[in-house]
Length: 326
Image (cartoon, rainbow, N blue to C red; front, side, top):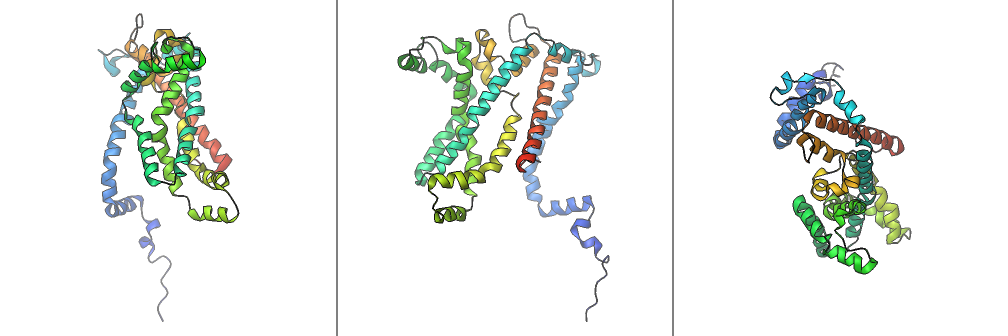
């Protein structure tokens, strides 16, 4: 009869009882190739994301490039107070929230709808062709996209003339009209990103168990019922995760496209926090002085707000359905 081992005799051999250092070394020896592949990603975030955070110190200084961070005068929260008292603040917040929420409402569902439509195509060749065509706009440079937009909405542009012929809209350069800026931005954003953003949803659709569809067909469900009761519920976790990430960018409206499209005539509806930060930081217009400290303070405020939105949205979705980022 074999002897019964003592409960504590092989305690060190149990993996979960190992020290953290030993577990890391053991995992590295087993998966060293994966760690090697991860190194470039880690280096990217350390160099371009975390290292520049040291520069946030200048938001609390009257920064002078000649003196550097160490020699510049500390002014505390002066730049934050100036921003909260800035006469442009209501306009910046209104425009930023308007463009961000419009993008969230109109752009966010479009990749989901496109993924559902592509998933229903029976021809694999047609499905791949549609996917490829929808991906192409994402790889076009923002500068080129904005050049195309400027040409289409000019006085003699195709979109301007088409809207004039169909709806009697006045023949004008639409980018000089404040009321047209947000629709132009939203439509171009959908066109540029709908295909690329649908990839994650198409991947989630391929992971759905086909037995669920078979069971639904046995119960008499048609194609529409299968989408409503099988496909969409299985997509909900992915949709929630992508929604949380999207909410985190509500105040981080892409300033590249805005800067390439807006003019002083459309500041009323187009000027957002990020473009204002750029102009104040680098003197983007006549009469606007360079103030890196003020610009950094505004950008810091913007980042804090984005983080809080992600945090509370994550908590809300966690309580409502149990799906969250962490």
